[in-house]
Length: 324
Length: 267
Image (cartoon, rainbow over all chains, first blue to last red; front, side, top):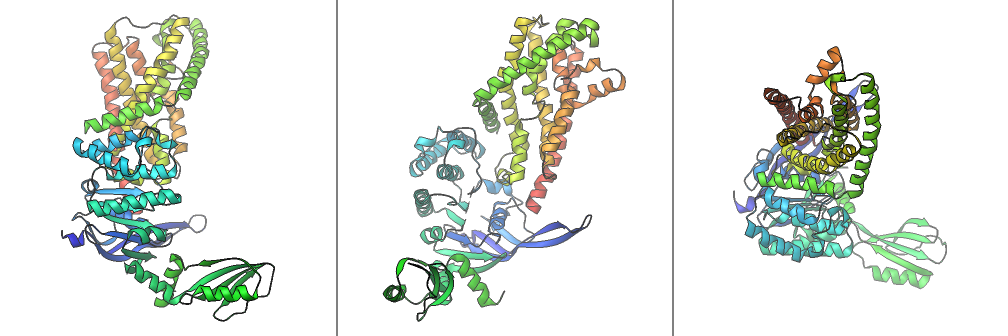
């Protein structure tokens, strides 16, 4: 195993058989290609974002990387191990956090889940104490240790889950939607912690998310997946260029009253709904002169500018490659 | 490794200990039912003395023991299996698979912890209340009590093994609750909870005695009542151990099939 290929996927596939009812007795069998030939490598110590719309195959990939799902085809190695064959061995070396699930002991104080991790991963006592102290301090858990998990807020529970995944010093940390449902303060805390973890300990982090800000603040490299295929692999700035070079931004204006569609250069009215109008304009153009022009000749009450989101960027990538 | 499962068992104990109101309500219910069933048995044994080979004091002991054991061996279900079924349904079970721990041992340890709590609280309280009101045939010999406790432990393991199979069935059925209910009713009858199995005549009685559920109440009760001594006691233990071994092995096979299903089909 070379550090450059710490995680290695070569033409990885996962095909699910889906049986659907088609009439009273008949069942139609069809294939769903959840992961359809993905190849990439992640070097040790990298922090990579793995993004894509719902059902794109993100979680399926993560599950294969942890060994709880066997690939249907292709090659997969994590830290030199075949995850599904050597699941228990790999478990000692990886940490996993699923944002929507918890591995903590629901009815018992948080501290008990950590005692359990201590024994389960056979962490040496000194190492355990040291890691506990560090996690408690950085994730702000001191007040929560004696609180039953079921009484924790979502953000608190997430911090608790992240600590539980790190006590055994995993070399890789998989995070599936770690900031889902968290408020701004909790999100910031989680991000800061992950950044420090990666910088100080060199933990390799693979992160799936819907939140582009997670990626912006944490990852230099991002991979976009859709329909089980890798659509983009590179720097985040590159992804923005792909998006901004071609797509439009949206200006939503609220006027004082219902008026005919605004007629202005560069602007295309997409929708009118009472006094509110949706105007598309090229991403490259500056919004300021357009806003000024509207304000000069229309009774403007309120407005907002919407950047192209990740879904729009991905849709555009598809359009460019002529997939649709 | 033993320390891990000891910790899981301790956790199982403490989880149930946190629900104090539920525990008090459980003790209350067991006591009320204990009285109802006790008076029914008195009427029955008045008509038919020495029914099933028990005198009235022994029959009443059996009643209160049954109330005490009900929660301990999770006769009607309601132990770990509801949680496991829910984890299968929600898909959380996937997160259990990447932990370096054995699934069956994990749940067994937790269930033993739960049973220990229920034995200490819901097992002893109704029995003591019953002993205040009725003449019970409780043994003086401490060794009989020790033998009884050991038989209860085996009963819990058999009960766990059955409920583990029930819970695993939810990997194939969309909802395991139906199976859990049916098995709950079967176990209520065949454990001897409604009437001692000795009372049933002919084939039904013979069948009831060889099914695994007699390990849950009938055998521990007979150990306490001094019906199994010497080699008879060894035989009773062997019966319980045998069923435990068989059912745990089947559970292990089913578990690997279920795991294979999850890792191949994604659950």
